[in-house]
Structures are given as C-alpha cells and as structure tokens.
Image 1 (cartoon, rainbow, N blue to C red):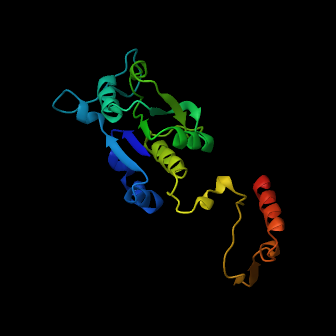
Image 2: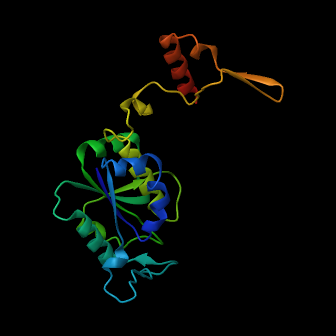
Image 3: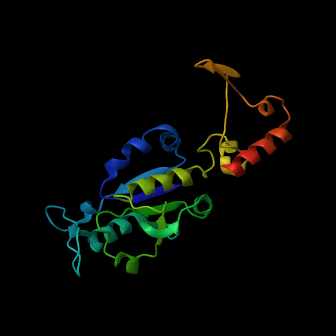
Length: 215
C-alpha cells in the first residue's frame, strides 16, 4: 500500500509515522508514505501558493495549479489510484471505507486542505472523494490524513503482525484486564471479573458482547 500525501506541512506528520506500528510497517515495506508539497510546484521565487478568495471573505485560499501539479506527480502513470480530499463537509470515514480502500487500491492520494481551503477547480481536473473524520473542523487536513493512514494500514496484511489483532473482526470489549488478578488501592481491592478467569470461552464472548453493546 502506497500513501501519497499532498500537504503544505509534511513535517507536522513526522512524529506519528516515525513511531510504533506505522514505523515498523514502513520499515517492513508493507506500506510506503510519500509527501508532495505544493510549494515545490509553485511558479514564483517565494514558493507562494495562497491568495485572497474571490468574492471576499477572511483568510487565504490555496491556488489550484500547485496542488494539481503535486497530485499529477503523485499519480504519475498509475491508472488505479484513489484520491481523497479531507474536508469537514465530506463523507464520514469508517472502517468499511478503510477495508474497501485497502482491498481495491495499491495507491492512495490524500489531499490535505489548509487555510480557507483549496481552489475548487482541482476537482474539475481530478476525480476525488471528499472525506471527513468527524463532525468538527480542524486547522488542516494532516490529522485526518494520519487517521486514514493508520486505519487503512491496519487492513494491510502483515502490518499488525497477527491478523487476530484486528478488533473489528473479532469479539472484543472496551473493557480489558491483565495481571495481577487483584490489586489494592487506598484500601480497596480491584479484581478482574470472574467470567474472564473461568476458561469458558462462550461465557467470555457473551460478556464481551454485552460490554460492547452497552458502551
């Protein structure tokens, strides 16, 4: 799986992709992550890519042409590419979308918005899907892009090491416990639920299902 991220601030994503499971997945060549900064495709000596919006209003809008060139570079000659545009007004991102993306595509381009947005003419050049990670507005599209990279990468075989680690494909609970079986804090004992200790997997699955439904 190859992720191509179009962003003005690639450095803002470094800390997350340079640690834990994503770092290991890149090292194991299960996934790759490449960045394309529209500033590198600007046609002026200051690499300026934003201007005031037509029609008035606050803030700045990112020009279409540098972004189009960045997307074209990311796409290359590949014919089967999915392009997502992060937007608070987009379709809600879900695990099902992540599964479909991992199954159908080897290359995914994620275009990260900033400021007041990107000149909408980019959508007349490239077919892309607006996607949102929640009912709120963020400063930019980099955090949503990281959420998408993480969620889609989990669906790539070998990324988690053990396919059973996919909570969405097994019976799991929002409540989990480990050793010791009992500990004391401020005079009160805290113990693991008995059902998890009896070895009856049918009872354990029923308990986990109940906890998941009530959460």
